[in-house]
Length: 148
Image (cartoon, rainbow, N blue to C red; front, side, top):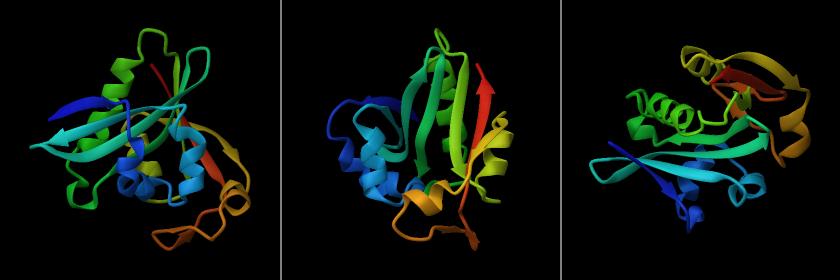
């Protein structure tokens, strides 16, 4: 397993990025300003992550996605551990925003995140179509945080 920064041609990983954020113009809002990392296993990229610096000491996971064939094998957790280590020098808080979904929130809680705040109606106001995850219509953006 190897994690490397992606410095160029970030859109080459669009198929993976769209797993976590299904509207390309929303990805475009953070992709260029974010740092991107790819986790490879046996030469195949199985997980990607885009990080942004939001404030002094505050970083945000804007996108983290694992290929469906490789989910539930620890790659997402490994990527989170990597970014915590990578940004620990000046990082104080790591944020992640997600839909209010029974699939994603428990994953982040198992990775040590706790509830921070909500942005009401984020998904219904910012996406051009309804987004469902595990049969749940996503409305609010739920932010979770973890201290470094």
